[in-house]
Image 1 (cartoon, one colour):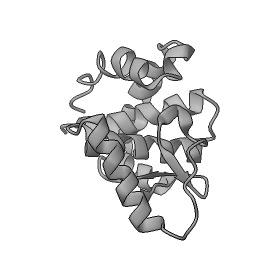
Image 2: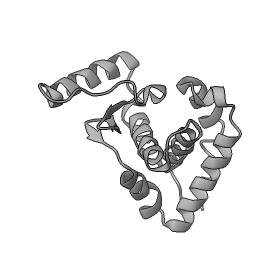
Image 3: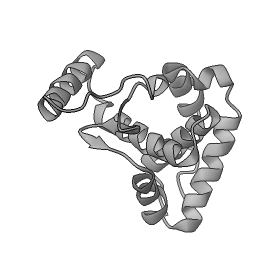
Length: 149
């Protein structure tokens, strides 16, 4: 079975978040939100992305709750009620499980998580705290590993 980069990024971000002190359910929500963020915005410049995010947020949340910029500051994603918010959606642990385990099956999902855990454990803790360093030092060198299972 061919494994694309999306579930690998989600698992990698899950273990990154766990390594940085988040509990497993929150880490799974962060993982899927981060993978979604990269998928949505990989071809947009940062300036366009920030403008688009602000416009979307202001439309959806005008006069409602404020989004929290501090909870997931390391990941550069906003939170709503303690959960990651990306692309107009709040992400949960269930979203992660759908993307990694339901789509690819339990056995392949476990292989993806094992791969991700090993990659994150090989990365320096300071690298895990910095998004661009994490992307360049932990993700890029390993993103094409485990392409089939």
